[in-house]
Length: 298
Image (tube, rainbow, N blue to C red):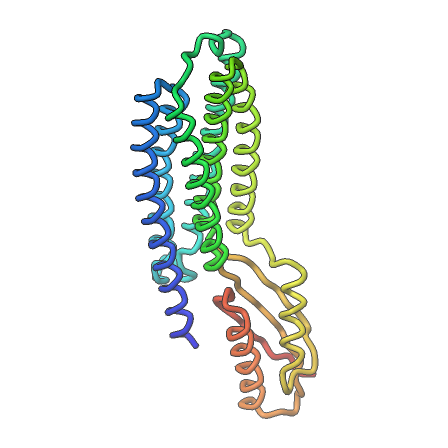
């Protein structure tokens, strides 16, 4: 059973590394393409969007470092492992995401106050095409990364998925701004950036809140605790459950349970009941890393 857990953790790390490498390659290619389109089509919005895509490469490296550190084996100084390092990576990405959103919002407000939006040059059609391509690619990367983040239960990957979504929203703003400028309404770019700012800040808040909850040993939700209780009570020899406690440690779950068993049973039989409860929980719930079972006489 322990070997299964080790293989699962290794597969999780491999999946995260593969997704991260795809993310880096896509962001580099997209940044170069958007930068070229921005220069050729005289679009400042597209050049800014290219810089945003390039900055996402840094975020993905943060994810890689976080997942690498969280996958380290337990040692004398960290007997419970290093899973919380992935939460730290998610918090860093949430902060980067929030800064990105605030910069977009601040730039939009500055343009409204100064009237600078009315002085923008009319961009070429190439910039509009680049914006559409960016939206499609980054939205695709969001769903691709989100799928694997949910599959391996990775906070850092989920944060990176939302970073792809923020880039997609940034490209939507660029598209609206470019289209608006070509139609004679340059202020549309500025108004769109304010809406995008709010959406990005909301995503950053959700990622930050989730990571903090996992850092402070928050209990599992009531539904999972009820499933755990039902599984324990269904085991042969278990007369009831006195206490059931759960806590999250990074993306893993620790379970402490006190069961009731016939007090007249020999010690080895009571131990066998506890082992059965332990093994069934470990087999049923892949996210559970450690189970402590205590037997009380009934």
